[in-house]
Length: 382
Image 1: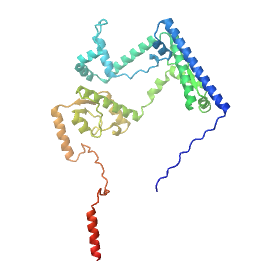
Image 2 (image 1 turned 120 degrees about the vertical axis):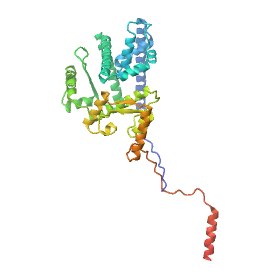
Image 3 (image 1 turned 90 degrees about the horizontal axis):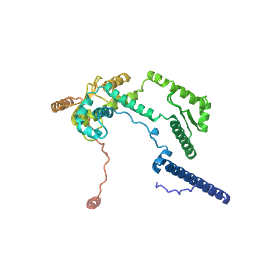
Image 4 (image 1 turned 45 degrees about the horizontal axis):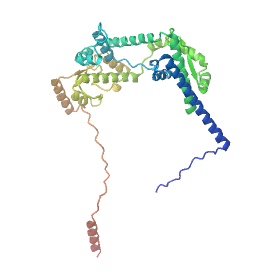
């Protein structure tokens, strides 16, 4: 049955009267005038600040929009970066400005030595380098927060902007929600910041049975008294988190040892065809596997106890990647082929593409055959 085309129905809207159209136009014009007025006032304020303090217009606009380092998130600490930073500081110790070695030149000149020394670091030493970087960040933040009045002004301005953005999102999309923000310690002077939409406020009052202000005070008491640190000691990480950490450690250490071997491009760990895709292709091996059996995906090693044992071994570098010599690689390949020939599943073959069993019709038809067959049938009838 052939499909029939249906006519597209137009959406019918209620027609506005002349009075309603005039009111709508007046509201649009009033809104445009108010926005233009606000823009002119903003430009005038920025120009006054530029004339008074001698700053550039771009810098002044950036400060008015609160594009400061206070609102930027810190990146995760990388052990390699912390190690190189410490070595560079030791190299430049006692040198004046202008005589110090640049980071790029230092890495280019001492790459082999840095890689060799980094490989010898234990897990505790890597954590010590990371802790040193975190201490430097905290000290830097304390220096930047030396003016409590300026900090309070920045916090109030940031949350005022957040309130406006929430109201704008609610007006555009009907989004409902709330947020509660409190200071992180007794040294901070910022008061709790709470924001509730109408329905969110009713939810907290009727369902949770607490007033919004009391919720903010409870969160402040929980954070300031450091109850989060005490409860974290009694909580176990979920199993999928442990598996993810094992995979991340295996992948990161694989990338590092391949970087030592000057392998270009990112190589993804292949658990299914480990011997062919990783060991024989790149001449590296994950040694001292802590669990019984061969190396396998952390998802398939067993329960929490097995995954935790694997994570401990990877974190302490007792289970680590090593490079194979040429003789070791040749012997490994011979053994793999011998085991595979005896029935062990060392190499996982790719699945062959299934072919359709339905026969295709001929592209051309031989008319001579049809005419000859028809003449033969006529002669048989006679």
